[in-house]
Amino acid sequence: GAVVSQHPSWVICKSGTSVKIECRSLDFQATTMFWYRQFPKQSLMLMATSNEGSKATYEQGVEKDKFLINHASLTLSTLTVTSAHPEDSSFYICSASPVVTEAFFGQGTRLTVV
Amino acid sequence: AQSVAQPEDQVNVAEGNPLTVKCTYSVSGNPYLFWYVQYPNRGLQFLLKYITGDNLVKGSYGFEAEFNKSQTSFHLKKPSALVSDSALYFCAVSPTSGGSYIPTFGRGTSLIVHP
Image (tube, rainbow over all chains, first blue to last red; front, top):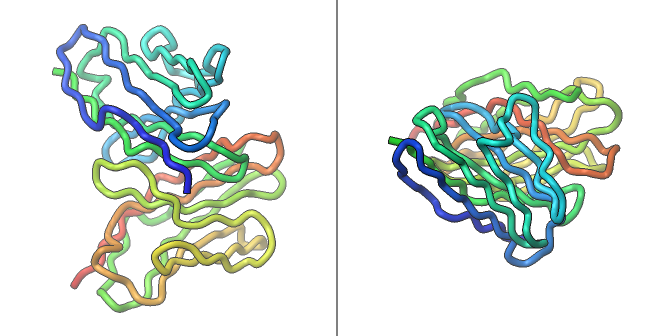
């Protein structure tokens, strides 16, 4: 199957700093990628849809100035958590769909803000 | 709006016994249905999907699921559980219209297989 690589797997940062998470589709092109947030023992919450060459589409309640998404190419989307605070600590997962009936997920990024 | 219900937070089963993880859904029109498995601190791994055709879908690691349109269910099953099957399982639904894959996930069911 297709591979989606997410980096880093885990990161610890100080409160007030920014963190960038990368999501790459390794063997297919993805015009659309998705970013999710997952709280402990809870489901995935869709944060935004990342569109190559255009602005991301954010879900209701997600601060677009806090979570900056850039889809610079057909194989790369980045999520930047700006001015991170402890409440931003979470597990972030990206996914990409080579076809409309399937999606592949990155391995996730554990963000801890101290 | 589409939704997915996984009524059990946790399912416990003895190794070698059959397992079932339940999922019901609500969506306008025909659904695409999926099961994913998540191991600790990892992303989701695809298990199987129903798009159309045979209601019984076979997937990875010996798992299968049956699409039941009248009951709007898509329960995940395996004839003989392994300890290594212990993980978090997510059911997801995506509408077939609109041309995009935007799934809605259930809250997840923790499967614990006891030796």
